[in-house]
Image 1: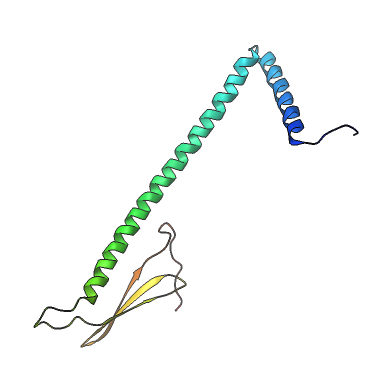
Image 2: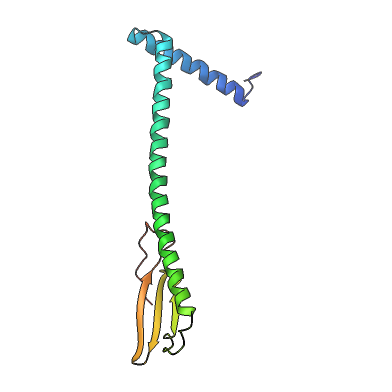
Length: 139
């Protein structure tokens, strides 16, 4: 079409004009004033935005709780690891030596402690995203 500009402002104008006509037709159908229909749509958008914000807030609260719990567990683990590094007081037997290994696939941490009677293995599961269960490890 000659003389037709396809700039975004033209489309916005056409869309706004179309919506205004739709609102006027709806107002006429419902025996309301166009302003009443316009306010109804504004209120609907506001309710929708509020609901979305509430949902996001709940998600963030759950995520915060999950991260807090993970932080608490990691701090406890750090304390345990620091306790392993500290040498025994004078006159006591040394702590058994331990080896920590992590499976890169499932992120399971395995502690192998060498005792006089032989090695003992314990497994602790730590994940980056606590809401996801790690897959079974085939190692």
